[in-house]
Image (tube, rainbow, N blue to C red; front, side, top):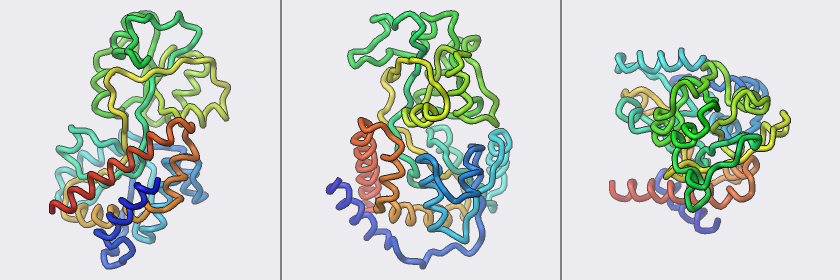
Length: 299
């Protein structure tokens, strides 16, 4: 933790974190498709890592930023349409950065640092065969698992990117075994359906299951990492590429660097994570800050 704080202080000095010289003059809308976040915005109170960090950032950017809910399909259409309007500014929050998206959109520094998702499996199924397990106890691939459990189904959220690696893994699964929950639903619905044994497999973040277990009675389950899945997945603000978005994201990044230094930011991650994930997330933050510092110094 001490090493991380030293890195953050160094990064903040490069950004003049507490200067208001780059204050925004126009109001910016950040779209989100996570319906449960609407109540967090109304109460100005976070209930998970996503909402706690997003609201903390909003307070730093006020009165320049406000949030607006859009169903995922409409939000995706708005972002795609914005690519044809170079003078516009259209942004969404809680977006994963993928190679495909980076070609078309600009991204902020990470808002959320997470250990990557796990495959959850109902324990009522026959045990996972050893031939499908890696040395570390994960599964060799998603397709191999679903091919073995041929009558089982995997429940996922429609239209959501699970990151480059998992998107490719999911694409190799027999589509007849995949149940897609409509885009206006949230991951909580996936968990509820999984809890009601409407599907044998699903993919969640560890903290999502921990939170949902406090609301819904979860069945006994096994959990696995998937193949050579990267250790981290980060969430960002994603905007169309324009002069306005570059100005906006510079301001956002400066405020994020300042936010990284606060106990509120670390607590927003640790308070909702199992304890065995704390060290992993701290290492992810440290690695990202090192990468940002390296880029800034090279410039």
